[in-house]
Amino acid sequence: MEYVYHMRDPKRALLFLQELHRELMDIWRSGIIFLLKDGLTDWYVFVNVDPAAASQIGPCLADRGERSEWTVDALAAQPNKAFMSSGMFEQIMADLDAFGDAQRDLQIQRIRSNI
Image (tube, rainbow, N blue to C red; front, side, top):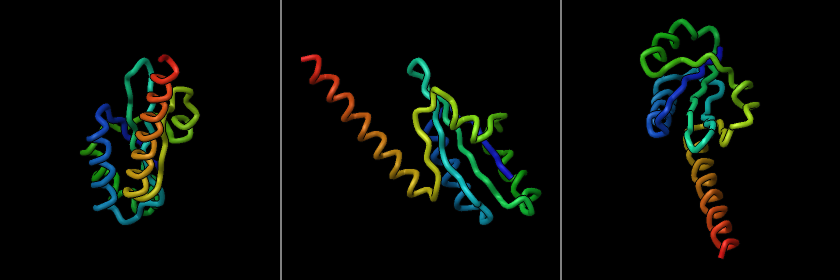
């Protein structure tokens, strides 16, 4: 069963995902996607769980975020998708760090090309 939650704040999204990993045992896949449009980001946390555990997991998730109508596949196909990572929380954080480093390097290259 797939759950996708919309978050406007990246810190809240990461804390939400971290809490899910601490509390839920039947996670098959989880991750973060963010869309970037006109300098604004929309963050989405997704989690796939065993359908047999959905009755226990649904109420746990309901109190934590705004459930989105988007699916992971639809978000992944968005032209405004700037980042997507899935896996354990530590892997997602490492991917975010690498993304940040790549963005910083890109900015440095742009600055140097304008000199």
